[in-house]
Amino acid sequence: MQIKTVIGFDIDEAKRFLESGETVGIPTETVYGLAANALNEDAVLRIFAVKNRPHFDPLIVHTHSTEEIKKYTEEIPDKAAQLIQQFMPGPLTLLLKKKKIVSDLITSGLDRVAIRIPNHPMLLQLLAKLDFPLAAPSANPFGYISPTTAQHVFDQLQGKIPYILDGGPTLVGVESTIIGFEKDEATVYRLGGLAVEDIEKVIGQVNIQVNESSNPKSPGMLKSHYAPKKNLVIGQLDDLMMQNTGKTIGVIAFDKYIDGIDKKNQILLSPTGNLNEAAKNLFAAMRKLDDSEVEKILAVTFPDEGLGRAINDRLKRASA
Ligand code: TXA
Ligand code: MG
Image (tube, rainbow, N blue to C red; front, side):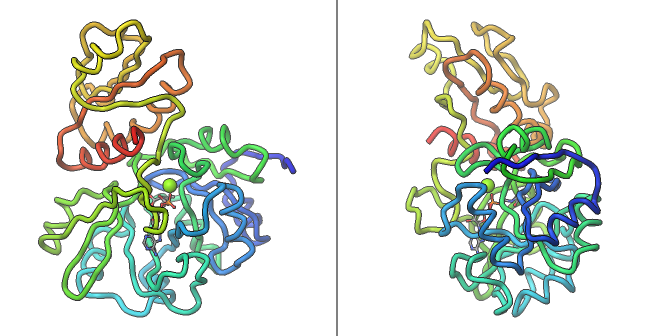
């Protein structure tokens, strides 16, 4: 059944839909989310249905304060407390032992819940007005590129959700960094909008265990993800161009155009060579080339530092 989808700026309208168990598109600083009442199982089920998302892939819970985090988690290890203090609200998600009140539907039966305080003024206002937290995955159909504008959400979920709260283009542009804690150790499970270097300045060295398998049982982090419909390849552009002569090629580059390819089919993610700006522009660039006339998309490898690591991770998954 198709319903009418409205894009608007009305926080109270979004609140009404969420209170009645509907799903709503919400802005965050990372990517747009598809939100529903995290304490209402029927509403949570709707998220999976709208996204076509398998139930083995757990959801992140969004809330607006440390007090709220404590309502849903059993304990906050020291390192987690330090990260909350330093980086929340912000593009960081913590895996913490869940309380019973958090449904197994949200965690896919795992005993930890992924929880974060997003840094977006409209969303923080909305969360403060609600008496429940919001479960929200990125607002894209399962496996496709995450949305960084309200229009992206509309383009893909139109007819399936009643409302999209428009908070402008997202400022970070890649999903939150996910980190968990075992004994005294911290492990990053998804490279994202908060750089590992920044985390390490606060809690010391962390493990990085970014899952690259395509085993659907390991939650999240599926290998083929964030994927455009067109074939995307990354690496040494000279070699890639040789292999693809005669094709119309689109390029995702960092700060310089690639010789020998029509500039109108090339997108520079940051002409000034700034990795934060590049991350912010990444998903929109992938969408633009996907919707253009190019037959194949080539992407350069970005510097393996700061948000460059999250960019390379997303490109790798998009090419899988
Ligand atoms: O920036 C973000 O985190 C965005 C915005 C909307 O907040 N959300 C987002 O959600 O990226 P989603 O569902 O697209 O990705 C969440 C990832 C998935 O890979 C999921 O498997 C993992 O987090 N995850 C969620 N709960 C988990 C848990 N309890 N244990 C391990 N991984 C979990
Ligand atoms: Mg996602």
